[in-house]
Length: 87
Image 1 (cartoon, one colour):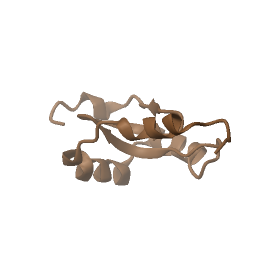
Image 2: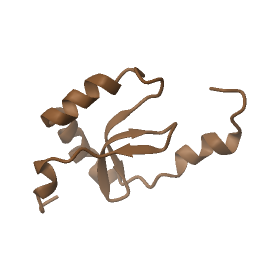
Image 3: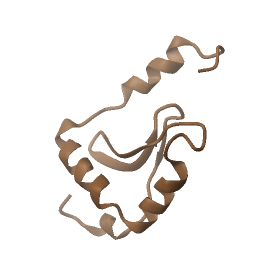
Image 4: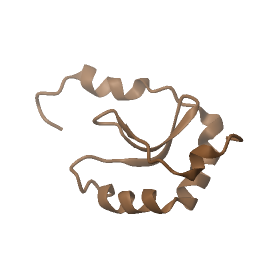
């Protein structure tokens, strides 16, 4: 972590609204993974871009495909799963 960062920069990672009700669904989505998500994950996992990404992260009432806490960056991959109105 760069020395120029301040405590407020670290704390802002903690203010994301988390919905624990979506935890099981997020786990299921991580296990399934559509092709485009799997291909992107292979490129960004294990800090290959210098920052850590997580897959299928519950934020508020949504599950984003990828999220980087350090950058506060959410990545959503378009796919047929977004057409499902049941979730």
